[in-house]
Length: 124
Image (cartoon, rainbow, N blue to C red; front, top):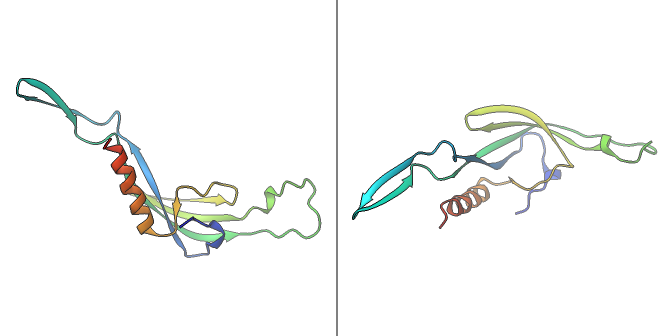
């Protein structure tokens, strides 16, 4: 299902996927098998986790008459969001002009996409 920000209201929860790049953190593990030197890494190059976002408030504007510059930037709807990700909580605004990709209405859709990303990260 496509994420539709316009349907969000106060109290709604939506999800996204956080990617951690482990390139510099992973350790090489060496093994000798049948006289051949083999290695593997202790973690995959990318790992993923789910971030939870809760809508705390919605700021909307209504234009009466004609706008001076016509851009309409001041009329953007802003969503005050609390995010829990990687054990941290933060609060910020997102606006209507930001891309919707990467957000999901349902945790099950998020899990499905995350499993696909993990599968690709393994290089299988």
